[in-house]
Image 1: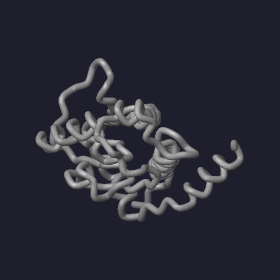
Image 2: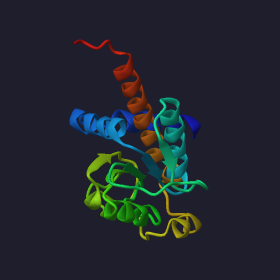
Image 3: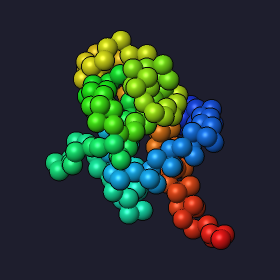
Length: 181
């Protein structure tokens, strides 16, 4: 079973195809944001926390929404909302509130037609989630709604983590590249 799961994950990662314009826009949002906020729920939150840690290592002003001390979000800021289904509460509510306050929203989701994607300025499509029967994350977990070989949306979270590590590598490369004047 272990080899089968590893093969599924490896082949899935090879299918991810985020275009250069999306990557460039995402990096620009990060570089120009006054503050970067990250939200997700369940494993998506854990992926977001890992990304926040990497961004903090680059001296960016980053906050995870569920932490104890989080400032208000404003129009100079960006919210990265991670939700495989694209309609997970409270991620969707957080994104809606950030949008009302004028922040840029980056949705990382498996469904570019989801509610989250529709209110976002930028959508990063990472395949891996099934269509959820309910918006409620806890209800999905308790009822056992997940993919057969990689439970709990693992393909989405693993793929998102790898994508975000690639973004960090690109940001570091941008900083290390010699400037031509």
